[in-house]
Amino acid sequence: MRERQASRSARRAREFEAFVAGAAGRLLHAATLLTAEAPGDNPRARRLLTLALAHTYACWDRLRGEDPYDRARQYLATRFAREAWHHHGLGRTRPHPDSALAVLTPQERLVLVLRLYEGVAEEQAAALLGLPTERVHLICDRATATLLHPRRAAAPPVAGAKVAPS
Image (cartoon, rainbow, N blue to C red; front, side, top):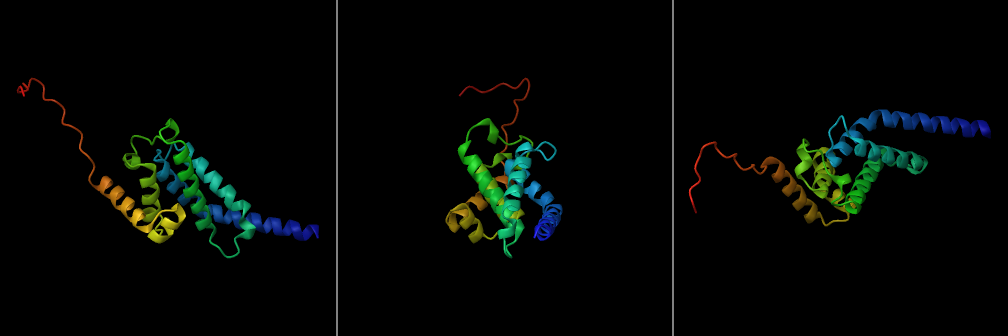
């Protein structure tokens, strides 16, 4: 009996290690995009990844044919959304200023990463986030437009130029 349980535990550990070897890099990249941190300095993204992998390992035996990557991605997304909601406006949610996604809100980053980076269908993203499909579509369009057509900063003043009185 003990040998069977030990064998089952060893098999479970090997399967999970193989999953992590194949999925952790992509999940970390998705988490880094969500947090808008620099790739080399991403403690929040690494924390999200660790929590998602721990959750996936905890329910590994109950997956029963379900894709473990989908489960980990769902947990990563919902955990990010919950943390962004609870810490909105606090320093913990500030993106890295050099990140291309820094101009987006956490919700826009979440929808954009799910839809464009992860390839999640609008309907699935809407169900995962508890939003209407039309809202997910609108958020994705707005985020894409923001990235493709960034606001331009005001031109610096020209030295020695005189400003006409108004």
